[in-house]
Image 1: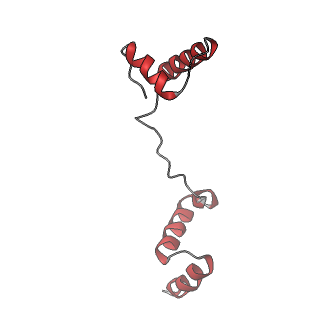
Image 2 (image 1 turned 60 degrees about the vertical axis):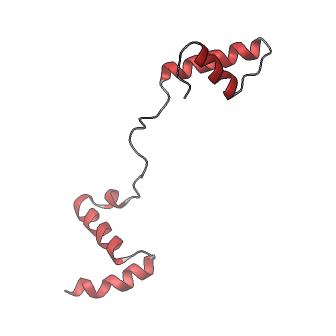
Image 3 (image 1 turned 90 degrees about the vertical axis):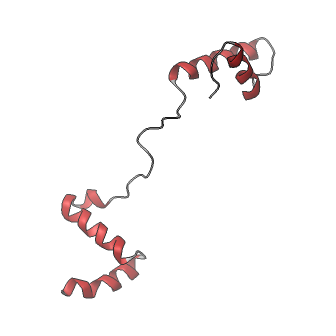
Length: 89
């Protein structure tokens, strides 16, 4: 096929592999220009993320420690969480 003759010059011109060029062309055929925009590789969810409840508790602890003039670093906060049987993130 004629398009095979253009693969190498096109991939060299844009600094991508022929395989990546074929992937982009397939995505373009399926969804147009929007489909070839770079995609995020970031996961959609993070199972290890700190819960909102835990985050609120940490902020509350930090503010209380600072207000009372105590150290409010991560080790101190983890210690306080452990004292109340809560898991430190």
